[in-house]
Picture 1 (cartoon, rainbow, N blue to C red):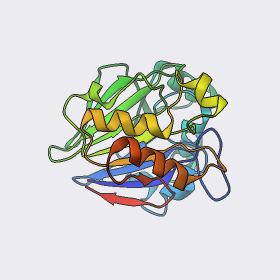
Picture 2 (cartoon, rainbow, N blue to C red; picture 1 turned 30 degrees about the vertical axis):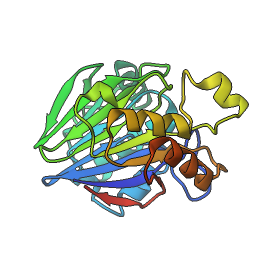
Picture 3 (cartoon, rainbow, N blue to C red; picture 1 turned 60 degrees about the horizontal axis):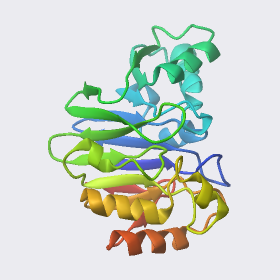
Picture 4 (tube, rainbow, N blue to C red; picture 1 turned 180 degrees about the vertical axis):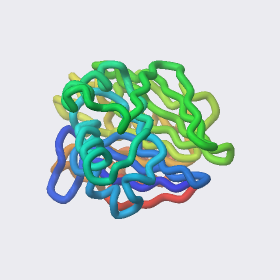
Length: 246
């Protein structure tokens, strides 16, 4: 299994950094997880758009999905490619439909999923878990039979990778806030700090940790150090173009 970070900026895109988006490749399958602003351009450095096998979108906040209608434009009007399955919450799929003026099919096959649902794409099983974040938000676990990837999407500190059962080989966990800031003090029910991410991943037995969704202008080394202290092992900070082979 290979994971490529297309974008990792939280809330809005920072200079040279797209918002949330991850390309997961396993067994000849190409899956896009989240499609935040800027990820479509980055995706094309790695695969042709028409070679995607599925897209999973965690929730309806725009920094996680607004490239989807642009993807539809490319596939429909230029590449003439139909039948891309798009899995997300019912709310998110409704927004995509509205923006595309209801002309979604046959380019996209919209499929609503919710907490506990499992989907199989080729040899990859994807399980959804509702996280602690408004609106309905889904974390994902991707399992190809040999490796497991857990993705937190956006979540408060009371949700855990443990919701997916067996420990993940790699956990991609948001670390939006820095410890001790006012935002962290009042926002732990919607986002994690780097310390929260490290503690959660350690408790869940996650074998490797990548922290992501840092706000533009954040100190990545500071976030890494805080996450490592809580996790008890080395931690990487997401950056655009980073490739991790499991």
